[in-house]
Length: 320
Ligand SMILES: NC(=O)c1ccc[n+]([C@@H]2O[C@H](COP(=O)([O-])OP(=O)(O)OC[C@H]3O[C@@H](n4cnc5c(N)ncnc54)[C@H](OP(=O)(O)O)[C@@H]3O)[C@@H](O)[C@H]2O)c1
Image (tube, rainbow, N blue to C red):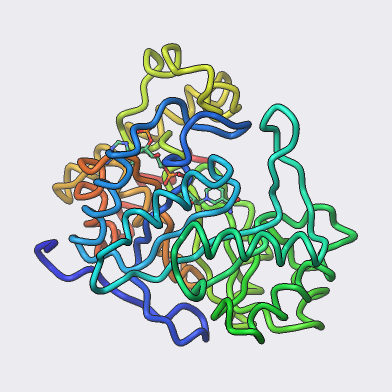
């Protein structure tokens, strides 16, 4: 067990008490699809999940899209025989198209089919939190949201939420059923949601779990120019602007500042980046992606790390 129990927090008004760090299962979907993470060893994926659970993480965030079922299958396998099962959160609306490129659907029948396939892969009776992955196509968000509300009524999912929605889209679907949770991107290098979305979530008491708090690995302290050059072509990050100039130099400078702060707290830059995202009043918890068991422990101090004003000034100095 992690030396001090992982801090927990209520997730909005769902009644769920979740650890401030959750296990993100995108990368364990592997490389074989449009947004893959390069080669991934399934046994390492399962070992990573088990390490997270041993250390007290009590929820996993996955999606049908991650490896088009592979991530959910790994979660399902990892949960077999686990006595105290963690909460399982998953998402719908991204489907495999030709060439394993993502296609989007929020049609009722498609959402219902997806939910049943996810339940099967995960091996659970009900999904603890079911989320619309992306508000695409935008003209179908009401139909998709009504389908999630239907699944909740049937008891196949316990709570419902959305990801990547803006405030107008939230207002639109809230007329159909309350939005219990929101999953936006948030990190030192993606701060747009501070303007409108986070204040709205706070005011509406919507639970917020933020994704990519370490910029999908950019802020861990282990990302270097050499690593990026050698990245597999099946790792989506190779094509992402955050991992290329002109943003790369700025991001690596930010990692240097995170490293200085991390040293003062006897931890690593990735944990400081996660603690930074958690410092926002509207943020209940952060989803951190792990793909190997050794990656889990070094990040967990983030759940209890209180950054000082001095730390924040040093980190944010020239971050924007
Ligand atoms: N709703 C959405 O649209 C959406 C979008 C993105 C993510 N998410 C969710 O949020 C989760 C987290 O986001 P993310 O995976 O993009 O990014 P992240 O948590 O910012 O970064 C995760 C990556 O950092 C690296 N890492 C983790 N621990 C490390 C350690 N101790 N030392 C060094 N490197 C370490 C790993 O990749 P390497 O080892 O390969 O560097 C890992 O895959 C996802 O898994 C997913 O559940 C949702």
